[in-house]
Length: 165
Image (tube, rainbow, N blue to C red; front, top):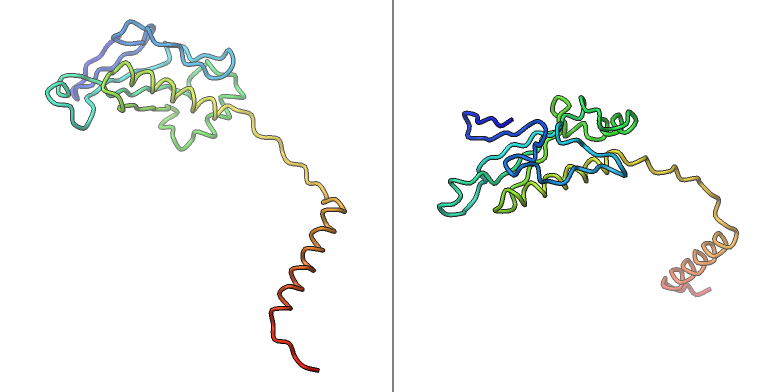
């Protein structure tokens, strides 16, 4: 489904939301075999900012990719919970928005936006690092540290004034 709004934005949703290109984009792979279905992605295209001559006024090369994380069924419950928690500052009403406008072609910007979404989700769904177990320093380490302290202390005392006795 393609919508044209008042603001000149083109919005493509639904199955084959690969957009005007006929759904030729790679699926957004989160981690392993988990993939975000195209039906859950909403692509919006608008005019990019910056120089570009006469061409810039006619091409919608900036890409905005929206994905409703809160309503998605693509992620396992544990991953979804983790992602909602870690991406809370980036979410607006449970929707994650990724923008790309670096390239002059809409196609390249679409690839960049999809890659950014995949990277964000990969980081957000990664398991937390294992807690570090505190260990006691070895006897040799403690002895070397104390020996270095004594040596450094002696050097610094030697720099001072020598008092005649």
